Image (tube, rainbow, N blue to C red; front, side):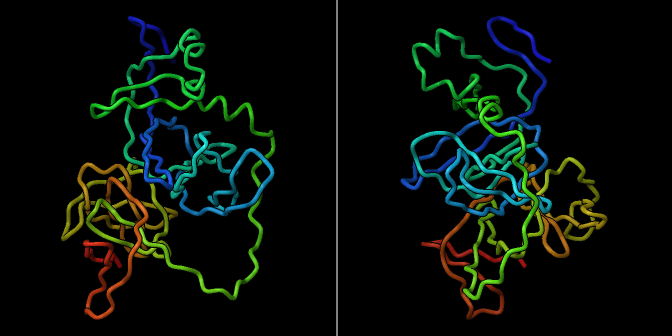
Length: 257
């Protein structure tokens, strides 16, 4: 539901604030609609003669990946899963409720045609964030595009381990992550070192806190972590200690296990 008030558009939708980082280290911030099935970090890159980049794997289905249509190469670490496609971003920063935003009109699009990929903008933490126009993607995507997962052939080549930085405090191996879910169903109940618990696929996970303002819970084999931000990190594991650490430039951080 939306209505116009004082030249602003008001609605009751929620959005994800996302970061896109280019290979040249330039960063863009956009707002994406909240009507997603979930978020995936599994990406199958394909050299496709089509209008999408590859596939994101989610719940044994492959969703074609799109991202912001700029002539730049982005780091895509996470994929917001919509009904018929996935939107790739570098990082998901926050989920917010937008009560009003400035909407671009036809005159603005005539003066600045490059704004056609957006519907309007909001102010978030003293910055202007453009709202991406998801309808443009829906019009371009074919009707039947969700492909059932195919069994992958065994590869002899050893898979390179990917590591992620969580709230600039901890590092975790990609293979140790079961999933990342929204904290909507999280139940606060403090006990021992835990702040509560959450259920996922008929299993209850106790949850520890990394950032009390976080909106996401990362699940590993026997517990979860409430966090705010996650990014891929590059470096090496320090093996000569009783507890594993990860070294990246001048940072040395503990590895979650």
